Length: 398
Image 1 (cartoon, rainbow, N blue to C red):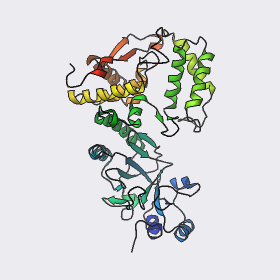
Image 2 (image 1 turned 30 degrees about the vertical axis):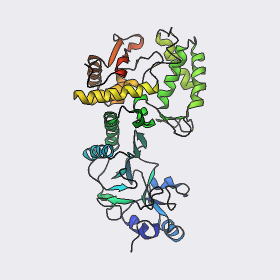
Image 3 (image 1 turned 90 degrees about the horizontal axis):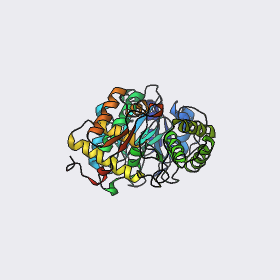
Image 4 (image 1 turned 45 degrees about the horizontal axis):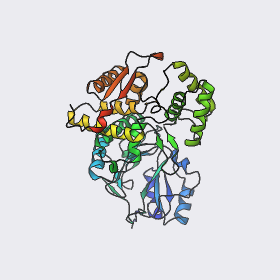
């Protein structure tokens, strides 16, 4: 009889159905396998599988994500309605598939991948488990003490080739929509907002243990450069020195830059410092601007929640939420967003003309205010969030 919690009873079935897998420790999500990422692009060979069956038969099984395997969309929401809304969005965009339950209402949707590298990332309360990830498919959940179970089929009765496929482009577009949807679902209650909700508005993700920035590092360095500029450093070297010291102290630099294998170094700060100094932007003259900006992360979260609820109440396009959150991520030390149309359009997954139209709507609804809409040096216009939104309610504000 097949016991789906044990590797020794299901390993041969997973090999037959072409799922790369690895052993995970009993009642755990961890593996002791070294160099397990090799299985992102290849199946375990028969000798390895037999060794696992012989020595680790009581272990659970992790399914390895990669270009010849699967991508997992892990909806880590304790709120059943929110989890169901996100799941419905995913299914509407990629298709109905098998899903794994460990600690309901949290759910993981499993899709096939046809030779594409899908990068792993976190969007609010959703983890995209792409290449270089694995998830527990079979075993005992360490918190509930119950077996993981599958709905709509499982890898034991659904060959990998029969799973609906997810492409990298589909996942990229879905991530943007999930960020918008979670913005619309955000409660104004502070207790409901998590650290990951803040990432939607601030553009960076921090490790919950160390507090170091792990994603959005380019944005983080740019913010530090602008903060150094507003503190009235007069040379590009002084700006870079100030920002680089803070960047090293607050950022995970173990991984290379996102789009290359090059490590981060001081030259990255110096290039940005020279650009900022050449921009000719006026420096802050008030002690309330610059090192201690009005738009703290907390106020950004509150503003993002207000806009999301306002958009929902007014039945406005959800693209307003995406553009609003993108602009919040680019607030500089003088509390204005000076990001270019192209930058905001790329982040919001909109064409440039559409981005400008949405930004005009944000102004028309008195959510943002143009402070230099003719464009200054380097042809960048400046926009500021409207502060009185923080003390208003979407239903009563006109």
